[in-house]
Image 1 (cartoon, rainbow, N blue to C red):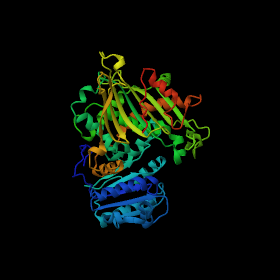
Image 2 (tube, rainbow, N blue to C red):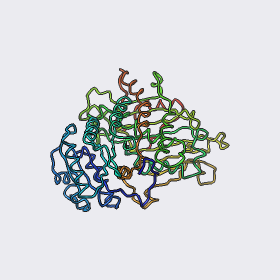
Image 3 (cartoon, rainbow, N blue to C red):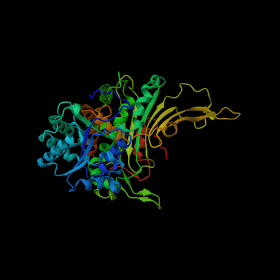
Image 4 (tube, rainbow, N blue to C red):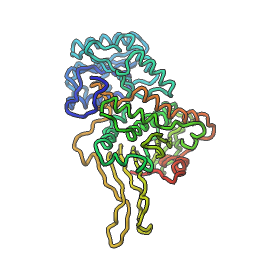
Length: 500
């Protein structure tokens, strides 16, 4: 199926015969996300009966040990159709012998299972191993599909450390694989609630007329986490909140929320509009960055009963670290629809609530004939798209309070996924893995999209690296540094700080 596959969710979405090869198969992502996704697809009859899985990693194991490692004591009891179809190869990613053995195993599976030469190579390794695996696949000729079959590459984030390293990785990728074979994964795009942004905007006529600068006062996008970095301290030291969350997840959600209507829901039509929106974001420059970007790092906080350590106390973190665990930006989009509307985005760890949402706050009425004394807790109208948790949509508006006097306060109409739909929502990796097998690139990130996202955040990262002043801090379980409140407060606005 071509990369121009139309985005759709229907009962005819079934994977063709294929083998999924997972590099980094002994790692946490394979056990927690990828194998459960394959299990669920098998349980829902989305996989072809001629399907196989091959794990590749450095850890010495045989096939049975690998099955036990990723599936536990139950083994293949939950996936009897994969009996004899799960293989494991131990070897270095820089060792040509690893790929020769892989080619032999894949040929055996084609012969024994009828997997038709279709292969999806999933890179679940540390980023530094990406070029090794790609070159190894090319060296063994596994990047080239046989006639009437396919060879596809799925790459986990981080895709580069900055724009230059992303270009270098692209050069390596494109030397072995055509762009149509490449699936850069961002698991946020696999969430039903993120895709629902498209449904809300383009399947309803009532929202399109107000989705612009005339009606929208400002937009807030929040990705807040209550957890700290945990065991990821050494990784986080090289990433920080900007690279880990904002450069990818936040900008992807922003692009879907703000892009122009595509001519169709084909993969390239949707991705073209996302790229156009990202290209319209005003790039940060020089000292102006200090006015539009805020960072912070969490310190010890919480309660006496639940005292949480500071970031510098976490395992694997430099005691003098200047890595940001919180980032907030004001972005401006220079196009006809959004000129003059500020977009406030933020992400942080050790915040009071776990919440991901997009909130459009609308303009206040040009004239309120109602006296201020009768306006009880009246907030501006707003449309809130809740991506996680409590997935749904809320519309906030003014309503009369019951009683003899005429008092007005804010009320809300609320839509909840759990209460409205009986259908089970697939996990993000389940959806994206099936898309990669089918060949639908709609929810994956194109090369030019990656570059544009890095162009937006690189100047800010560089500015922060040059700044020798102490990094602003915030207590764990608070809503971030006071500088973030000043960032949005300069225009008379305030963050939506909701506690679950």
